Length: 326
Image (cartoon, rainbow, N blue to C red):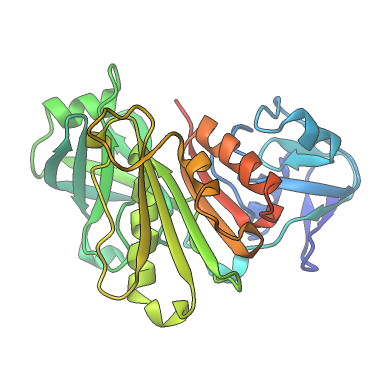
């Protein structure tokens, strides 16, 4: 067994056969994670001391990241005692992952290729989660991961689901699903959630159905608005065509600077054009006094992270949930 030391003086033991992430979870230590496949960078950590080996290629890291000593804890196994520059998130009291029955309560078409799915779960189940987390929806012998698009105060679990050609679950929803169909859910999963910060600017980036966990976090912030005095909240929501921007923020207690962005706009579009990460830089936001939450494609997450960090954002102020293709 090897000793893993974190920057907030947390230590835990990890077997050489386990990844650092799995070792932490076995010791009830919570580290950042999302995809568990070495692709999304959520579990990125600076290696201060010690050695480790990758169980698979860390494709989520750039060559410069590797030169700078970063590793991905979801695929790295220790070969000695380690010291890592990451924090233990156990103070957020994440719920244990469990499996529950659920039923289709409502299906609403909200664009040509996106539906809003609402699932109801047994009221006595006491299913709790942090806004921004995701679950696996299980139908028969297959499961798919979807971010919850509603805060924990909502009675139903809400999801935005895109219709992918050949996608088993999306095809089921668009063509076969009926009210009261029985499904199972597995969760909550992930560490993409709002963290209290001293930074003035809270910036959200989302593309497509990546707006789901952002919507959930904003709903939570609206409910707890007294904690956000003197904060400026931005939302950059990107799509290709105008119909892709199927949701916009409307809240009673918080003000959101909303910037819709189209990458393939026509002449009728008077809003921002290009990619969300590029539009951020044109809005004169002090990145040194900001924290970012980004959800969308792998490419958007990687490009956004590199761009804003190179322009002043601190490395530990970028949180992301990359949609990884199955």
